[in-house]
Picture 1 (tube, rainbow, N blue to C red):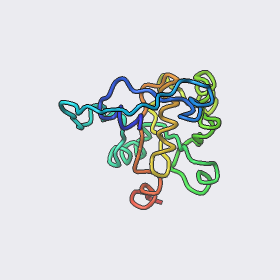
Picture 2 (picture 1 turned 180 degrees about the vertical axis):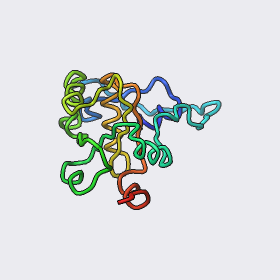
Picture 3 (picture 1 turned 120 degrees about the horizontal axis):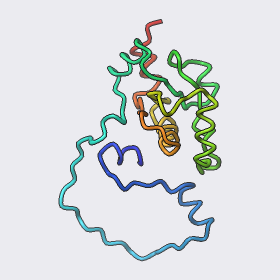
Picture 4 (picture 1 turned 60 degrees about the vertical axis):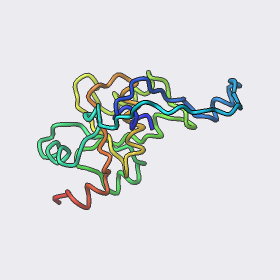
Length: 165
C-alpha cells in the first residue's frame, strides 16, 4: 500500500513497522469507537511519481544496455531456478524479521555487502508480481537509496515475454 500511495503522489505515508500485531504487542492505545468518514473534495489518481515504476519497455532497454542494477527479492531457490541476467538476490525476508524491518543500519549494510552502491547505482527491484520487490524497494529507500524503482510486471512476465535466450 505504501508503494501505491507514494506512486500516486501522497506525501505523508508511513509504514507501521510490524503491523497491527506489533502495535498490540507494544501495548499502544486502541480506539474502538465508530469512525465516521468524510468524503474528500477530489481524488486525482494520475501517477505523480512515475519514476518509482519501471515499465517493461524501460526494463528491456536497461537490460540490453546494462543501465541499472537489478535486485531479485525472491527466495534463493526461486532465484537459482531463474532470474533476470545480472540480478543480485536479496530476498525481502533478509531485511525483515517477523514482519519487522531490520534497522536502517542493518538494511544498508545488507545491500552494501551484496555490492550495491546506493549513492551511484540505479536500482530496479523485482519479484514474482512486485510484492516482495516493493519490500526491497522500501528497504532501499529508508536506507538512503534515491534512484530505485519497481519492475512490478515481475520475473515471470519477463521470462515469458522478453527473455532472449
